[in-house]
Amino acid sequence: MNTNNENKTEQQRLGQLKNLVMLAAADGHLTDSEMAVLLAVASRENLTPEEFNKVIDDPDSVSIQLPEDEETKLAYLRDMVAMMMIDGELDEHELAICKLYAMALGFRSSIVDGMIAGVIDQLDANAAAN
Image 1: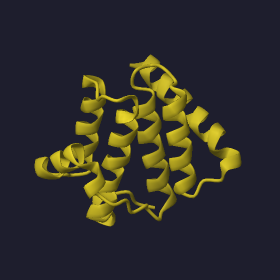
Image 2: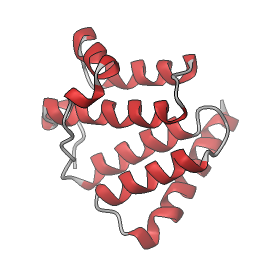
Image 3: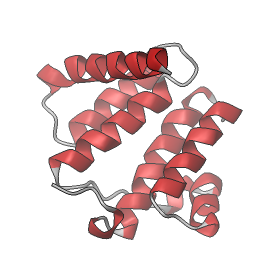
Image 4: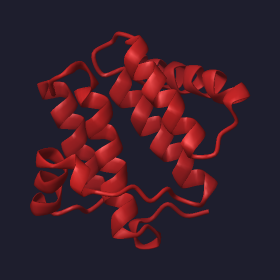
């Protein structure tokens, strides 16, 4: 399956950024590291500066449209876990949000913990390799 932006609706791309903003802001503020990830995702998703600012300034103005293909769902979950782990700490509130999002994507609750742990391991391995 293909996760090219041509296959995603604008609402899906904006919704993914909104999810990441909500997760990053769960502790009450956006750090420079979190903002850098948000900018990278916005760039990858071909969002304009205006679209980016709309999501940052008023996330409630953006509705969420979940992707339908499994590859995109996994990519979105990886984004969420990466955002959750950006500060190197596993915050329980962020983890709960990430789990809810994974289930909203259609992943069974019985495998979400293992999936998140797998993504964390993958991120750790990538960081160690760099």
